Amino acid sequence: MASSSNVLYNNSIPVSSSTAITENNIKEPKTILSPLSANKSSQSFVNIIFDSLFINNNRVLFGNSAWNFTVNVNNNTIDLLTLEKVKDNQTIRFHGKNISLLIPTSKNLHISSQPFVIKPSGKWDLLDYFGRDYNSTNNFGKGNHIVYPTNGKETTLHFNILNYKYSVKINKDPDYVLKYHIQSNFSKLST
Image (cartoon, one colour):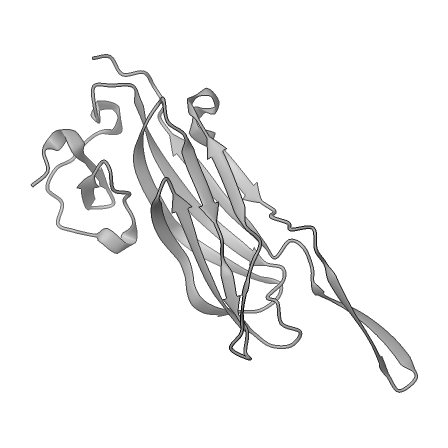
């Protein structure tokens, strides 16, 4: 059993400070630890809340594709989508899906993702990568964030039907727009 000095408590989910709190590791609450009394060293309690994901390019010309969207936060993962069918111009709301950590002020908060899509043909394709770093000088990114990842590649398909010429962008940037916000109580806690 973990001691009260290394257990976080958030939404009835106690875990050690080296483990992120996600909805996947729910256990019986044992200890409540206030973020301000979390440890007697310089650190910050950080909560990353994922708000929504706008699908700009599902990578298929017609129909839906299956997306896998997992976010890595300081080597802890949270699944936002697990092979969920999506279509272009769809907005998916996460309704408070979050991950919380204690971060020493000497370390960075690193948030990244390399999502992928499985097309109806069964082939898979990598979506645009994103990575962001925050540290104590910017209060671990406290506030609202919007990610517009781009790989700089757009593909346009040109075709003719009868006497008409058509052009369709089938790989438009960005693939998605991710919105999240960070809550942080960065403060130097005395020893």
